[in-house]
Length: 107
Image 1 (cartoon, one colour):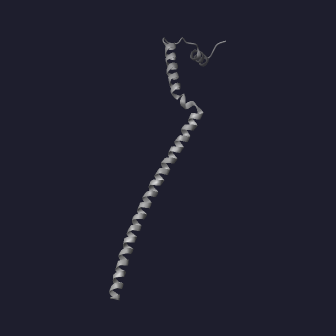
Image 2: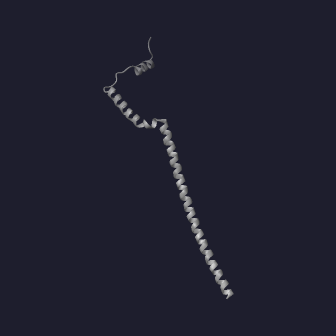
Image 3: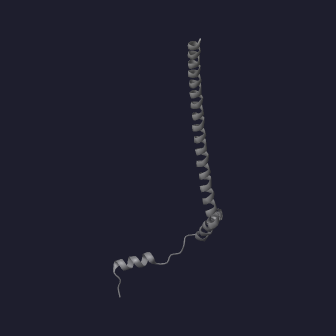
């Protein structure tokens, strides 16, 4: 039974070959590097730790937003205080003016 050219090419492409020199050493080196990477990622592979880190991140963001909100409210309070002082000075000045007019009228 003869094979057509396509089947012959396929047989050659899928046939066994001997690996190049140093193949086993390169594979071992890659495995060693892979183990180092998995050790580094080992802590993040624990699901509970991921949840804890996520919760801590959310709490930190919430604290930052709360702190910012407090600063804004404090600034608004200071501005309102300054406005009250200005209003009291104006009211005091008008009261003095009215008092001086009343005294001038009664004298």
